[in-house]
Amino acid sequence: MVTLIFLIGVFLQCTLNISGVLSQSGNSVCKVNAIRRPANSGFGTCTGSSLPVNKSCNVQCQPGYRPTGSGLLTCRTTGWNIPTLSCSISECPQYSSGKPKCLCNKGFTGILTAINGVWYGVCTPKPNCLTSSIIRRPGTSIGTCKDILLYNGASCSLSCLPGYTAKNSNVVTCKNSIIAQAPLTCSLANCPSNAIGAPSCTCKQGYNGKLTWNGSAWNGTCLSVCTSADLPLTSNAHTASACGQYVESGNKLVWNVIMNVLRQAM
Image (cartoon, rainbow, N blue to C red; front, top):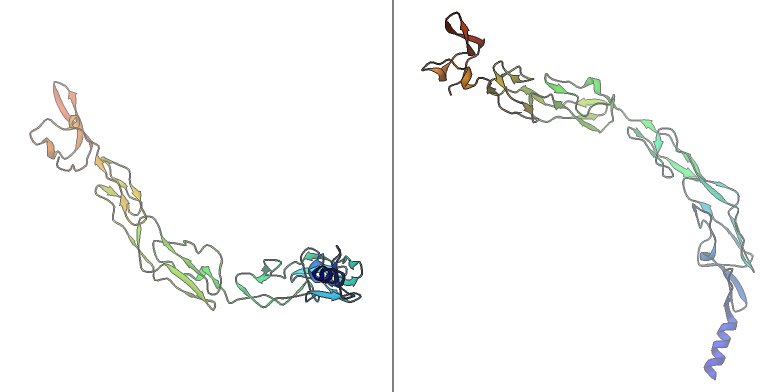
């Protein structure tokens, strides 16, 4: 019986309505976590767990959002009023991006601060480098250094043209508007056996094959196009000095040279 009377007393001292109003010992308060905040807003000055009836606070837009309307909230006996505040995303200043958290673009520097949805601060260019000042030795290509500007502190890479082998570092760096040149050297690669025309190697006349550049060397083989039927019928056919065939001339067979090429021993 005593327990029942105690529980009834607690119930009378502490009740909560659906509007977030908590009545405790005759004093009504509004629970802060019952506030219906607009999208992209924070609790602002509505701190703590509750606020007494007839007291007010403000919800505020999050940084990077511009406020429209009022974020004023008042605790009433019926609960919180609904604020008219709306929060729209703010555009970033010139040479910056990443809204709602705007930062200076690559190659620019500055400190940006958002106050009530307005960004303050300026992004200024860093001391960048022109890629046109990069020294390219024979056999080198622009690689990844394709843009006109190389931003301060940034790097790019040169590369060797097909048919050239690379030696030393290929990295180019911009330091306070000065290019740190790459020590890259590109040396002409030798063509495979029976091929000519470096750096664009092809099989020489009398030989056939597919040659491909793998980035550091040539792959493929050039084989003679002569067949056994093409060789003169002599005892030293395996060392013939030319590819050709026998043709009838008058009453005899004459060896007709098709290609004047030296033939490897068979």
